[in-house]
Amino acid sequence: MRPQQPVPLPVELDIVQPRQWEQRRVEPRYHCGPATLGSVILARQRETHHGWVLNLSTHGAGVLLTQALAVETLLVLHVKSTDGQRRYELPGRVIHSTTQFSGDWLIGCVFADPLSADDLEALL
Image (tube, rainbow, N blue to C red; front, side):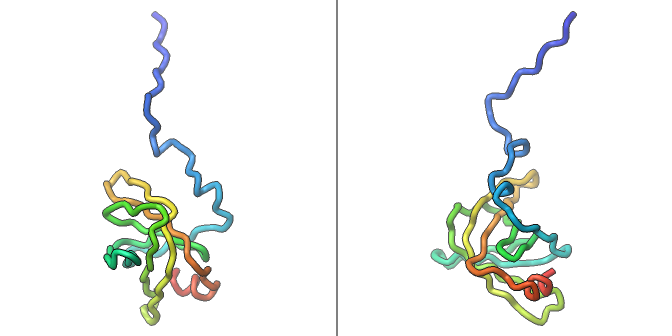
């Protein structure tokens, strides 16, 4: 008996699809230390969402939240330096919301103004 050929699924699975934003990324993202807390304040709704800052670059961040945010949503990311001496308020906008296996959402955002190398180092 000949083995059956696999049948393609009629849906696209996010976990196997190439991410469009990864192809546009021209600089490395750096993993933040464990338990790097951050707050996302939505500019228009005046809502605050607390989450974990997973990675940073000079131009953006990846933040884990419990809900999705719409692409193009304006926000301000609040995060403290690793020594706790400085608090950063980083305006930006959402470029993607990607569901995770845990049910949380990875929110990718791009900053309105890039971080300096010193500021990036202070946050890592």
